[in-house]
Length: 108
Image (cartoon, rainbow, N blue to C red; front, top):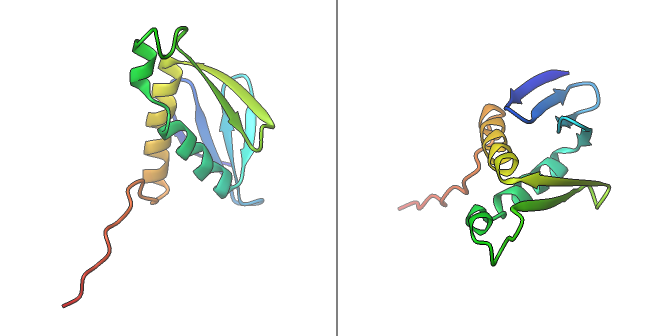
């Protein structure tokens, strides 16, 4: 396995043998297909960090993250969510996959 990127809490590996990604969450290693990795990125990007600082919206400052059709469940604090967002952003840029949607080309 090749290490794609590591952050304070997480590490992403890529395996060429089974064409999968492995995310080390510290306490658990999760095997992900590329589609599952994209779904993880969507879920993490959808988390509103601002809600963590409003006690009416997120009283305890935790996020529940379910992966792979509810096969894995993680309870993340604010620092872990921020770190996961940054780690996914850098990992996708290292893999050469842009996180922004390109605008269509207009031909004249």
